[in-house]
Image 1: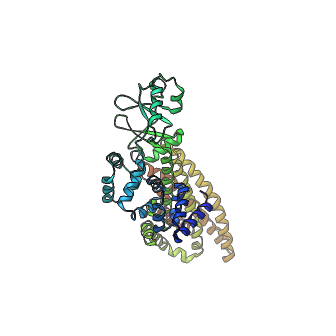
Image 2: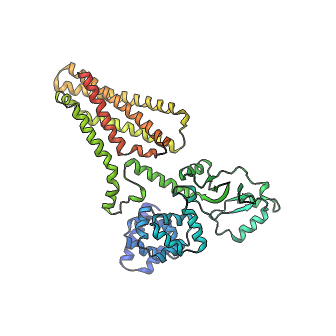
Image 3: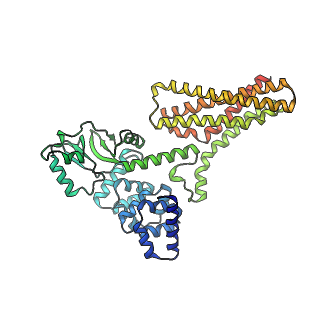
Length: 459
């Protein structure tokens, strides 16, 4: 939905609720897509959200809305939904969406809701909840089309015609052996085109791209994107087919991971903890720990600058160029960190050839440092000569500023290149490198390099 259309929908919902025009509200809700309604919830109060949710025609449609909500909005909303209502909604949701909602709840309430579900739905939801929240097992659905390899094309088509409504996706038909192991895949189109007496094993594709239940959701998303798949089978143990990850869930994963990386690089917390509509104290409490690194490195920076206070007393102009130094070194380092982090996320980094990556960024840092070091040196020489009228002092001062800028930018570029690679090797999120700690640390290191070089040159 376009932004203007969403504003109109939000305004209409608010007006109808205030005027208590429930019949008109029901008509608006009934003709609006669940995703469009979910997009409006962030601009509504909890009370307004509940009113809209309770006038959605079916529990299945309510489930669609809940599955589209951001974690922070969802957690606040379902706290106000009674267990009986929420249980009815969850019973109509696909297993992966049920899992998404249950993970937002505390363990006690999740257990109560699971007990209220039907035995079949409860069993499926419990099995999915047993997997790690960011794994393929937690992301998969267990309603899919799979047939024994001896089944003929005609038999498969007949079964699909009689009851494929529950299957999450029918574009792919998976083929298994006697013990449920995945042995092949074919498409519905291929099955329809084959002679009715032809067994699936005769025209299936035996080399199936698959993932294990423990595979990280980011790796699942990369495979789907790489091979342009609409779904990806999930296996467990000895290649037993247990579920399917669909492309709509992969889109959610990509969006979630992008949001998480953005928030980490900004040092603003996690997606489920941040919302512009959240209580200000809760948002502040989430962000305060991330800012503590700025305080720590700021204190270290103060001590570093104090170490060279005698130098600054002699030539206060050196302090005037610190903001310029911080801006250049910090930005070039963040550029390198962002580029390398993106390359890691896109699978473009070959860890056997890291030397080439580091060398190229070193050259980039040297070029950028050289260009801006020259410009900063010229500015420093001009300003120093203007204030002191001493050619010798202006030359030495320009050399100090220029050398400090080049060195600081080069070190910052290398740090922005190497740290994401090390974080990836240590199984940490490389996006964290671009946070406040990196920026403030580069300020401290740049100040130390700059003042140290100036002290050596000026004597």
